[in-house]
Length: 315
Length: 191
Image (cartoon, rainbow over all chains, first blue to last red; front, side, top):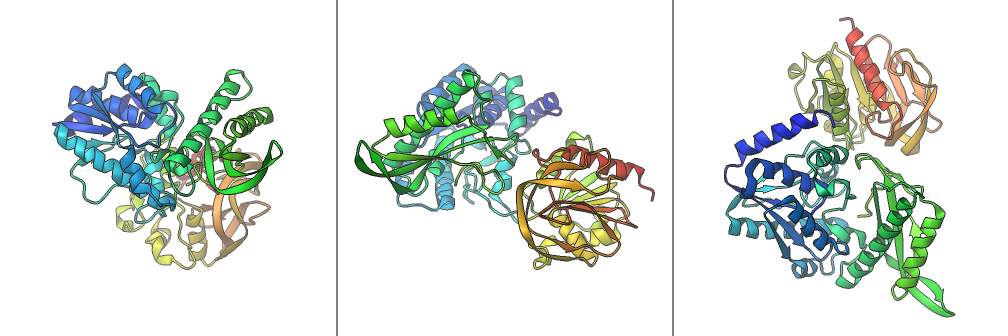
């Protein structure tokens, strides 16, 4: 990143001057919010509380992994299980923008409660450029409302501080490496989490299907990359489609769900090409999903669209 | 050197700003409602793309017309920015016969300035529904593709260029060099 050292020093100074009292940071454990937390912690120390919300939509083992990172970074943190609240609010909702706005609003309500308890006047977020660009504004079309921008309610009892607003992911990763932030190489994961990888209604059952499929895609691709068969893509995951199709399992008719595999290369998330995954790796993913998840999934497809005209996530 | 980016609402306006910043240019994104008087000391201007259908939503393009009429410094219009400047000077627009999203093989017809030192053919990324159907009088086409006859234009007697594709995105080959060439044009510009 151009001028990374200056950026770090300027941000710490700016934070010191603006945040005089206490602050909380919305911290998912992704590289953006982890870097923002590390920078602000350097400026205000334990006056910062990192809040991680388990919304019931996170990946397999994610909450534990994030907690371990918080500990290794020495953050003052709290983990709140709000999964019931999120599932209740998402009941019968299928429109992608409605999902994103509901999730954004639920997040803020949790942060408001925590801020009040902690006596914080500031909410810090790891918002980066694509988040506000794609969320739209007076002149820009809304491509998708990122939970940390388009999902923010108009009335909020805290001041917002977003030190990474003008950066892209590749730049944030450079900072993460300089600051020794554990999340530096984690793949991007959307704020609304698995809800936008579950097309149609977000139920605990559907989330469980896509969570397991995402785990298999990640695990097989990591194994293939470790074996030197391919480079790790920028982002790689599974999407649960709302339609059903016919199959045959052990001479019996099956009528089940479809998983789409998505893997892309990108530098900044603003343009992307689908990854040329070796066929034997795709084969391993497909077989493992259809064999181990036979109750729910009987078909696997691979998404071969670039951004534009598609986006990286499906919703 | 001071080169600002006029924000017409593109997904990639901020990418143009990033490329210019990395080229150590004094740059800023400004809304297209900014009066020309506030921009008259610039050395150059980039008109970003945007979601508006330029032919039918002229109001959404703000003061772009004023900048094109009054500026004596070089201007580069990108995507909707190019469409707007072509229509402004008498060209015509319409829906692309083959809309282009993603990779497009660009064929350069003229290497004099914007494409100086670049290959005859390379891959650029585009994202547009409409295109320039007829370029204005006094403009030359300096690049095309199989799916879009007018990928880049230059005005003969004023320092104005337009590109239909997006040199600012990572996937466009030689994108940074196109910006460097534009900056060289600005440096060499004789007022």
